[in-house]
Image 1: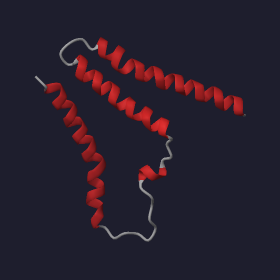
Image 2 (image 1 turned 60 degrees about the horizontal axis):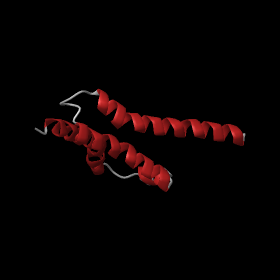
Image 3 (image 1 turned 60 degrees about the vertical axis):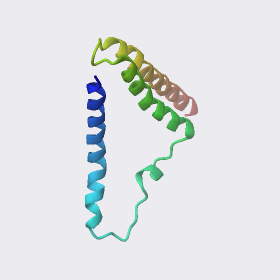
Length: 104
């Protein structure tokens, strides 16, 4: 019944293992004198952009759970799940381009 959700969770687990296992395995090496800041403190994101990234992840996941594209047609998921995300980021990308052109 939930085989699609299990597949998504396996993919998430694999991605997390790819990201975190090298960090865990690298802890036994001697530390260098230069300390680098963690990745998330180097990336300066505003609250709005963080909210947009979270919505980008949660909206398709929620629509996938609701529409179950692995059982029925993939077209409704592409149009209702991924379509709004791609449309919003596309509009944002175009707006940033116009704002940069105006500021030059």
